[in-house]
Length: 204
Image (cartoon, rainbow, N blue to C red; front, side):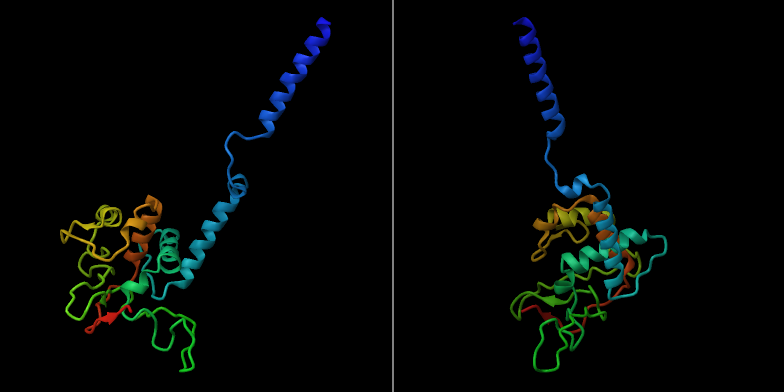
């Protein structure tokens, strides 16, 4: 009888150990467990970002992978051009096809790319999107250092102008990782300086 109890106890312990080994304590996604897939996906994002930039990039003294990732976030995810380029698309390239000769390919406007000038209010409003291209004298996007850029993106407050963003959806962007914000800043530092158009555009 004693021997049977010993064998039974050993079987229970063995079953418990095997169960713990086979069942991970924290469930992750298949992608997390496959190791290299996440890195491959990030590399693809960098490649796509590098290919879809509508303007020539200045990569001198910059990490091209970080710039490419920033382009991917700005142009393929965040839609920054919708509010910061006036007009957003090249003439005749609106992404919505029409019977009036619009191609529907959605090419971003490379003239005044991210230079602001989009009007968000009634005709008397002074709320227009900012020029986020590099300042010609400092080469910093919108004249902001990286740390100041963090403040703008995470608090909605511009420490240089000492004002708050009226339209920018920073409450969503504040959750981005430091790496993603670094990438956006690197991309914005690599695009050409541009001036907003003389006449503002209307988003709607």
